[in-house]
Length: 76
Image 1 (tube, one colour):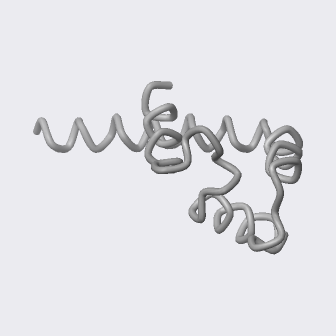
Image 2: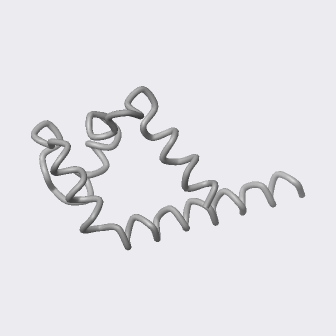
């Protein structure tokens, strides 16, 4: 889960106290859901996060697996 936290930390760089304003987060939500990035509000982002929490947790698990796989390749 550390890789997931690292991903969130990096994805919200510059916007950690207000992640709903992050251009990267807005873009990711737009490409995933079709909601227009420029019209997203904090409420929209929180609502999206809550609705898609299972998918988001699955994604964070996947990032952890990819990170672990990268480390194994680098060690070899």
